[in-house]
Length: 182
Image (cartoon, rainbow, N blue to C red; front, top):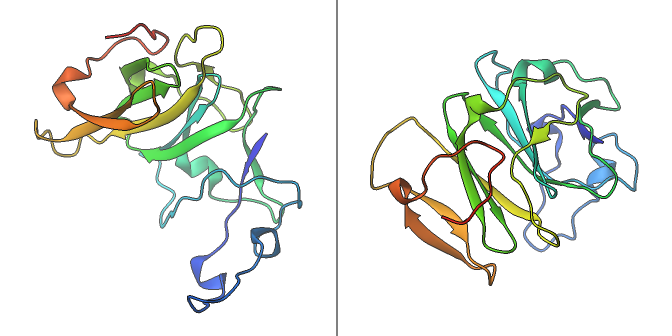
């Protein structure tokens, strides 16, 4: 399970560059065994924005950002993560973007985020990419559709896990559960 918390940035104490820092569990109300996978700055919980989740085993999920506007003191459930899986990334999207998932073995898939149906908070999600045995997702890139500039690039991971830049047009769009090499 992944949870969302609503801590204010001004509640995080400012410290110097050489300061040791404080454990995050002392700043937000989570258990000591909780692992923080992502932190997103949100100024407004809009109905037109979504949280787009991706897990190691290729599960993706899209939930309205407004569903996280009133968290309890101990947080709220954001996504159910199956046993043996873990959250890789979560990003704020507009509902009009393309998403690229990349795997450890060098496969990738690009799809429009509208291909993933909207789901409630405490749900698992759907298969975003078909994985081969021993493979797993290592990253997710959301291609913002604000400016349709053909010079903008996405990132695709190679087999050595070093990102390389490719033109946006080269990363063709597919259904969200494919994972065959391009």
